[in-house]
Image (cartoon, rainbow, N blue to C red; front, side, top):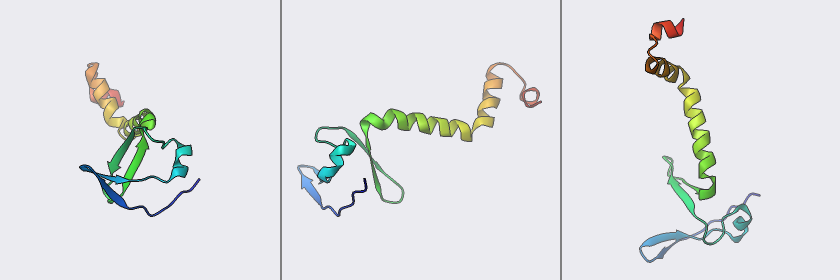
Length: 89
């Protein structure tokens, strides 16, 4: 389901509020649900259901490990007392 609407930012007390379209409730964005709001470098906002954070953290961890596998292997070998030159052989 694609939902796109232009919404206005409103003031509520000391906070700025954006109302989400009602049809997003089917995706879990219902009243009372906790969300993470992340400001991206591009200036966009990313809204993630708090219930999805564990999956996001796991995916990020796997990506970081995959991107840094060689360095992590060297550190693991060092922790076990293995010479890094011997570990590469």
